[in-house]
Length: 265
Ligand SMILES: NC(=O)c1ccc[n+]([C@@H]2O[C@H](COP(=O)([O-])OP(=O)(O)OC[C@H]3O[C@@H](n4cnc5c(N)ncnc54)[C@H](O)[C@@H]3O)[C@@H](O)[C@H]2O)c1
Image (cartoon, rainbow, N blue to C red; front, side, top):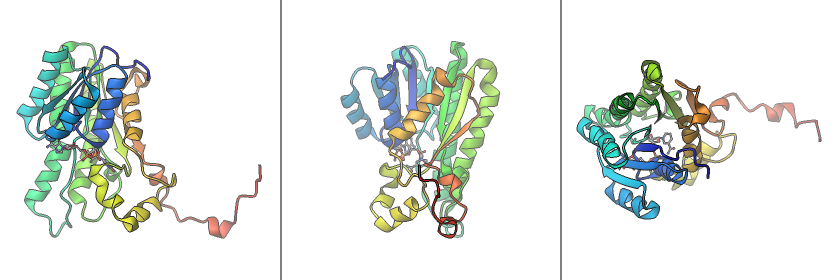
């Protein structure tokens, strides 16, 4: 591992599991001090035990502004700064539009969209105080571009996260703060366990993925850290699809009609 994040302090919202945990692990391996926030206290404790010094878990709900503010304050109290932030927490209560209750809509949109707004607000305030720039990476979804049955709240929230990231990039640029979004396709995490436990559902997904497999969380963490690093010093307001080429696969497969490739090497 490189030391790209040596002497940096990172905040990971939703850092106890899946993609957030993979981001925290990689940041820690690359030299960052990490404050990971989550409602899953057991997951945070396990990660603290695994990673040891330089990784601190904070119990916080991203839908509550006071909690989010406290996470950033904890990074400053413990490690002196908040240089880079990742807004990852998310989940959904799916339902068809005609069935979906107001409470279900609010749960998903508050968690996936308001949580990112609150994170960006307090992360950027701290970065502005520091006057040394900063980076924010938000985890949206392929569903920001692609609707799914029973997914209206999630799809709307994730499209909102992509737009919000661009708005942040615009508003924070004069402070040297870059904001980017990652749009993952199917990733094997506890969130998607139901797809992996159902062979037919998994096959339906994989049939649409040109790379022929889902992603592992580390394959989302790596591009997230790239966007947060100095390697991406001129990248802001970008949306990076990390989907195994899913989004380019909608056209009918004409290979059976064209025949095989003629070139034989
Ligand atoms: N797994 C996928 O296929 C996939 C695809 C596209 C986007 N995403 C997005 O990636 C992000 C991470 O998902 P994941 O797949 O790693 O799932 P995950 O369930 O493993 O991780 C999500 C984390 O968010 C935490 N969380 C939930 N509500 C919270 C709250 N109110 N406050 C603080 N933390 C909270 C959970 O406890 C959990 O640790 C989500 O935003 C998800 O929508 C996932």
